[in-house]
Image 1 (tube, rainbow, N blue to C red):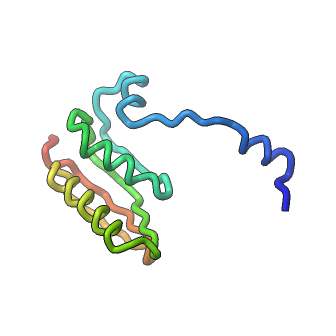
Image 2 (image 1 turned 180 degrees about the vertical axis):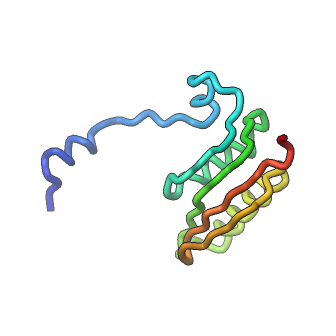
Length: 114
């Protein structure tokens, strides 16, 4: 099975990925009112960034969380600890929607803001 020529070309493009802090700096933003995250599995890297850099100023976080049904119990526990870390930073879940067994859509409000 070969990709059509136009799709094969797209797959050769190199992408520069940026973190939240560098994106905010490039745009001249000191804070974010609402951060909506839907990155199909890469959300855990963003959570790591929020946990490690307390200077990131986000008032509301709306995030789609993905869980691999085949991941180990240890990996699942690491993800649960990351979510507890968000709450320790003051992010309070105000809405949780479970569209399927492997996904959660969570809205957080930063209780340290406003």
